[in-house]
Amino acid sequence: MKTRLMLRFLLLGVILTLPLSGNAQKKAGDSEIGLGVVYGFDVGADGEMGMNVNLYRSLTDGIRIGADFIYYLLNDPQFQNPRFIELNGNINYHLVNQEVFRVYVLAGAHFAGYRYNRPVTGPDSEESKNEFGLNAGGGLEFDLEGIILFAEPKRTVGGFDQYSITFGGRFIF
Image (tube, rainbow, N blue to C red; front, top):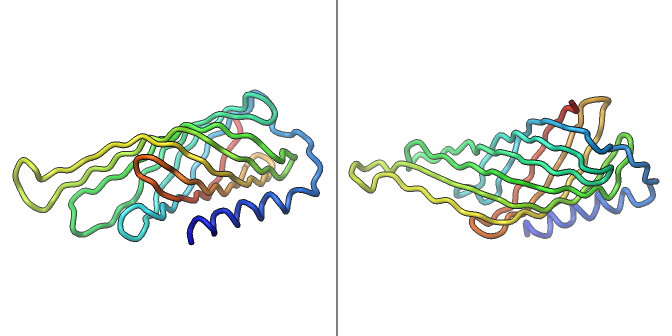
C-alpha cells in the first residue's frame, strides 16, 4: 500500500511537468543548506517524526551531490532514552530544471543506527544496532527567490528498510 502511494506521488509529479520546457536554472557550483521535517513510516511501531539537516552542491546544471542527517524524535514509553539517526549521501539528477520548479530523482548510500536503554539494570540494559543500505527516491522543488521549498519521498533498502518523506526548505549560498 505504501509503495503504491509513493510511486503514484512520484509519477504524478513527473506527468505534471512533462509539458514544461527545460531551461537549466540550477547552475554548477551552487551550494544549498536546508532544514526539514521527516516522517519515517517504519521507524518505531507506528512511524515517527524526525528533523533533517541537509547540504548540497551542484556539480553541473542537472547533477548535484549532498548529504543529510536525520534525528528521529522517538517516543516509546517502554524504552529509556531511545535514539534513531540516519546519515545519507545522495546524488540527484534533475529531470526538470526550471527557474521556479524542479523535479529530480535521487540515489545514494545510507547509514542508520539506533540505541535505547531497557528499563532493567545490568550489563544487557543497553541495545544498539547500526546498518548500511541504499536510497532511491525523488523530489519536487519550488524556488521562491532564494528559499527553495521541497518535498522528497524516499525508499531505503538494506539494513533498516523503510519509506520516508521529507518536507523543508533550503537556502542557496
